Length: 102
Image 1: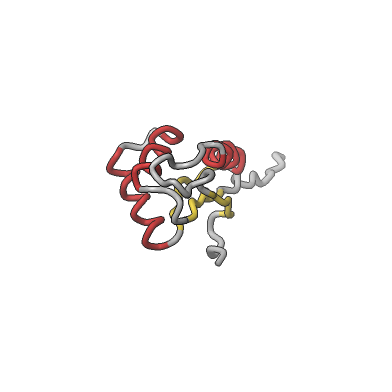
Image 2: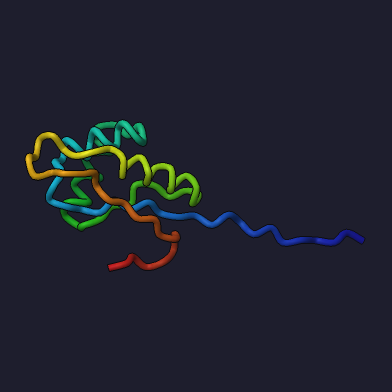
C-alpha cells in the first residue's frame, strides 16, 4: 500500500513599494524597468498606484525572489531630479493573502 504525503505549496509573498515625496514618476518608471524589466505602460501604472494609494504590489513570488528585488530597490539610489532626494525608495515584503499593514 502506498503512503501519501501531503506536499504543501510554497508560500507566496508580495513585494510592496511604498510611496514618498522624494522620487519622481520618471524615477519609479526607470527603476521598475531596470529591476523588473517592466515596460513603460506597466511601470507608469504602478507609479500612479503608489502615488495615489500610498503603496503598490510590484510582484507576487517566493520570499527569496522578493528579497532579491527588495535589495535592488533599496540600492537603486536617490532621484537626481529631486534635490531633496537622499536615498532609494522603500519596499516591504508581506505574505500574500494577508491584509496590508498600515
